[in-house]
Length: 136
Image (cartoon, rainbow, N blue to C red; front, side, top):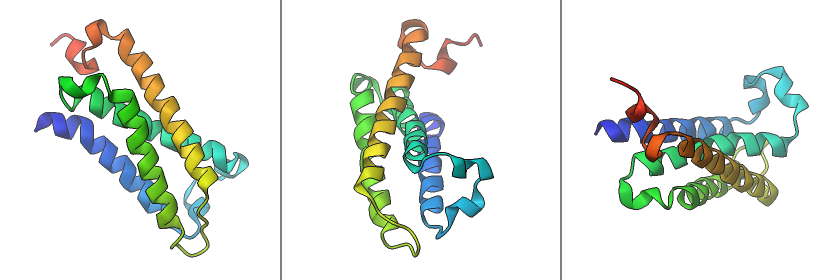
């Protein structure tokens, strides 16, 4: 149970934050002003890079040994599917648009985040979870 809480609650919480922001007709009003200076696609890449990294973390250390080898592709697929569902959701929100290009940016970001997390995971001794490699 502690594994579920440690590795999967952050995924669900972050996905909930994405859903909340997607439900807002004017999300830019709830974000820092400098965010408006950055391209929409770049924001999608960054947003889903975090989700991809969190999914990778969950599959790598929170889903058992059988899933570990598939952590990167599973993270990308899950984050991409969530991005697609988010675009569908946005199509029903007043003043929001749904775009397949946003979904592509989501998927690219998910791949970047999952790959970055996999690279970081390779730096920990024997591929163990970060907290497990710390002295107790």
